Image 1 (cartoon, rainbow, N blue to C red):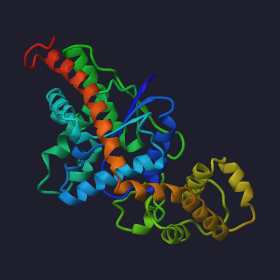
Image 2: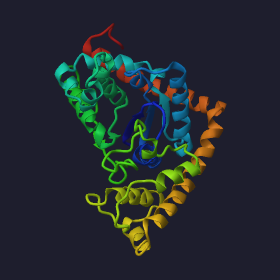
Image 3: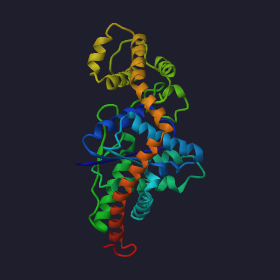
Image 4: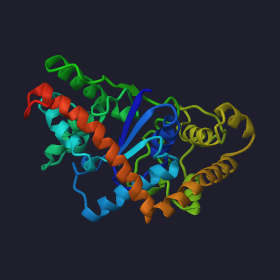
Length: 329
């Protein structure tokens, strides 16, 4: 069975885009692959974090993983900082990385642009991301288009290490979902839906209440012709909403278009709001029951134990390959 690794930062709100582009896909993948799902809290501190808020976000994200349908008996769910091998392997991969290739990372350029004081971690976190992936002999990494560059670097570092030291790493492949990988902002459908959007109407949080979801969908930007038709280039707003509808109802877009032929955007948006609420309500109920439960801690303890065993095996291979410490027998 092939192995999949994916990590999400615990940096606040999880949007509908995160759910469709990542979490919803994970539920399906856990039945076909050996899955490691990691809450990458060490990535989160590349930018300033408030201690208590970070702890809350870590727990919240863990609860959401389980609430959307991740089964801890099938997949390994764990917190990155509870597996020290990640930071250790990250340092070792920093030492085979080049400053030039790290400075070319689009996310580094975007987040550091115009700032006087930039964390060194913002520059060097791609090798840590590579360590996250390579520690588990990962075959496939499901990512959005915005992370593809980091996966290419991970592949380069793995090949460089294998060639220079010892051939121990599996070279991971990128797995980009064909549908729903890029859900767009409700207010600017030319941009990806983002929790950092200053306009809160631009994104739907998985934990938004039904009235908020309805308001956001009904106020979403579309166009003036009122025809429910998928045309990403000329009608990006309604095309984005059609994608969301299609994914949640598991219906082809052409079937949805036919159903709303002769109807306006008002009818379509009202029905879409009801569809989103119907799909998110059971997730929200499960989430709230988990947040204060001992069950969530048991799941995370179990995941950390399993991840530590696997990660430490690979870490020892890395140390032996580089000549660190004493030879492990």
